Length: 216
Image 1: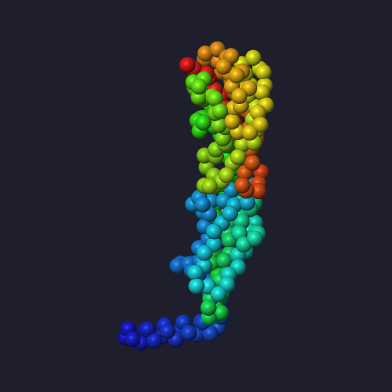
Image 2: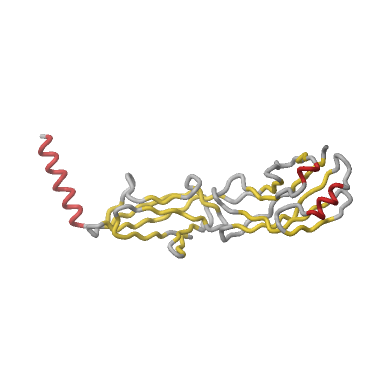
């Protein structure tokens, strides 16, 4: 009886393949489409994706917001909470396999400004005066793509007397440090207007203010 059932299943599968060389599959998938952070893509930016299809003759990728540039693929999601990317694979025998990949869509949160890799939300960073010399200003996203390069190009320092110092680059310069040395112990100042560039094309929000207290 088992032999008869096996032969029937074999004949049925051959019939189906003869009717159509396009196969819709769910599991297991032949290809792999991945992003750096658990199948999450972010609204407002081009999210780079990695596509691997071993032993395929060719493949194509489609979906709302999917683009290709110089051999690299990107997802620029629109509205909604999810989006689907379609991967069409041509196998060596010229048969076609179509796979669907679902990605969650999230909004970009506001980045944190950091001084010497220190900061927190709604708090004051306490630093010694010596730590402020050549202190580096950076920008950090708590929940965003790993490996995203953010380069600070300029920022402002507002002293306790409301004097505002504009600084080019990503470090506290010599003149600003001289001004900070004149401040009394436990004096607070803030770092704001942090301008930065990023490695992706998108609309990134402004970085938050860094509140600092000088304490020796």
